[in-house]
Image 1 (cartoon, rainbow, N blue to C red):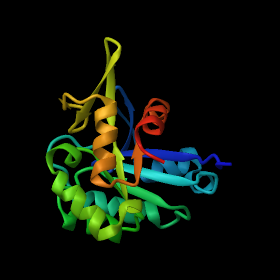
Image 2 (image 1 turned 90 degrees about the horizontal axis):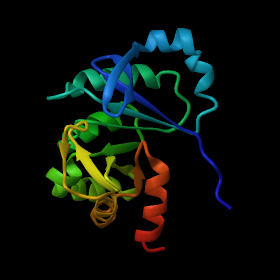
Image 3 (image 1 turned 30 degrees about the vertical axis):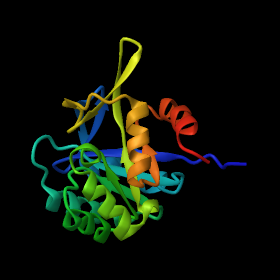
Image 4 (image 1 turned 90 degrees about the vertical axis):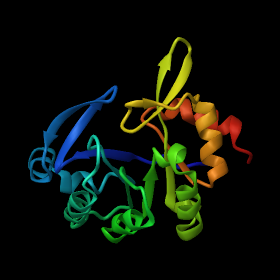
Length: 189
């Protein structure tokens, strides 16, 4: 029997944590604010895994993201995964050296499939999480990349197949229930 796990996602934009509603970001506060008002240090003991996404628009400041991951990891006693702006092996090493155990990949699934294959080969499929963002339009799904700003023309089913074929070990989506049923149908056991 599978154990239920609580996986929590934090969105980081230039040092400020954000909330997202349909790709529209709203500032919440910096890490010190989260620690003060959300008792973050107590919450982390209830979470099974933490995901941290760099949601900066345009060119991402990976060094700033890396520094924020190090601060977040100081009192973090659960596995965490991070991504957003990974465009090279150097970017991946930066995130892993900050303490992340897994890499979250979105845009390169479409624009740099060779990078995804290299990451899988270098770190193993268990380290690579395919992030699939999508909207439901007229009874069909439409997958987006680049922080939800660009449609890929793919359906969720196409994106799940692509992630599986590239060797990704996990799939993440804010709309996970929809993905779960598709992945169960698409990916061989």
